[in-house]
Image (cartoon, rainbow, N blue to C red; front, side, top):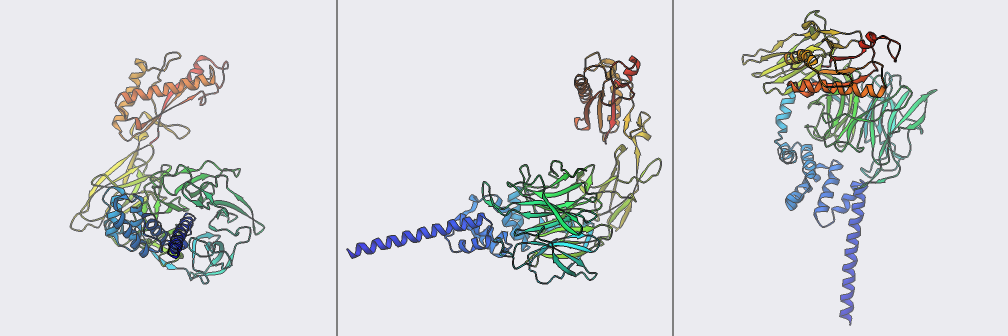
Length: 628
């Protein structure tokens, strides 16, 4: 009987231990789900090394930048469980390895992840020869804080930044540091912050506040604030981040309002305001993102309302994180990413706007980027000074920097872009540098002096191209010889289509159009007649002569007949004209068709019954506008 009691007690003890183990694991998973990674790791470290435990433990280390432990645990996970591991783990393992500058092993996993050869050392070597700037960083001295980041300009010599220095705030479960508040300070000439004071309780609450951006007059502020409550998603329970706006009224920040595109289902964060105050850039993981976080922009209307957020697209955004956007006075976009190839963690990139969209980003190089996270970049382009944040020292720190031209390489190509006929400088022209495989290496939009400069390498072949709307592109090929020619000075002289072709004219609205004989359509029809085809063949010849020319085909009607009928008829006629050009071998991507109906008359005949047939006839037309 005693033996049976002993056996029963032992079974109960084992059962209780199993339940405790199960309960502890459930708690660890709950903490991990809530991103309380330090507490979660403490429990996972004591558990049986199952695939789930190893993965969550490695991720907990990784997300808190405990990279040595993350690498050790990821390695154990990969050795033990091999091919059953989710492909995303290759990316995180590689990022952890990059954080310790183990590029060889990192590239092995990145090559598996991207299914193509990745060579980070070669990328870094090439970048050092081509990056246009170098940076001299100096940590900004700030006492009484273990974590400061996101410093932004605030008036002439004032700055704002986020800090966990308020020890009275509750601890954030992610890293056990106090919740973030926003602070303001005066930046001294010696690079130290003085008179550091928190923003008022209107701005700082019991939650996180960070990432402040200000209007040019410093009277409007946008900033982050984290939800106090967590929202359950498909995978985890998250306290999402929202963007708020505040106004400075009689020296007091007030009228704090939440922006309308915020949501309890996703985050919107890291606001950055354009110089004119008409566009707000931000990061978000809202539905429709390409990756974890994407960069978006939203229009700020004159009446204070907002447009629809617009994703900046796959040239800027990747399937991973793009965050901390900043738009400079010159309209250059800077942001941080771990999805574009870099040194490790978040790197700072720049992207120029070309023809209304941002181009392929350029890594700012190893004088500002480290193997860990570098982010929240701001700069005043005119004096080449700014700030960046980094956790390269183990905690988030603020750094001031001076930006200089990169003089590490002596090989360069430079020049200006001007009009061939008038010799006028073509401000806003795009200059692109290609290698011998016709791959774009660098590009730039020329400024007020219409000048450009690219760093190049010895013993290679290049091509430089100048383009501008309504101009014939110009290509110039050159090579860097082995004898050490150090520079090429290439003037790009672009000829406008209007100067090159008698049929091309600029109208009163500034549109550059191809003048053709009038195209006639049969009544109520949109098919191309033989006489119209003869006229359109002239356009075909012109498009074949200039393979880079792009044209908008627009059709117009007079005001007689119902509005919707005329609009539909014009659309059909424009589309029919486009299809005829395509049938003659013109690439469809070079053409655009649009029907305006009766909306753009050339005279006063804006309604039926007020003009002669001849006057109405003036408005019935097809136009061919050069759009590139």
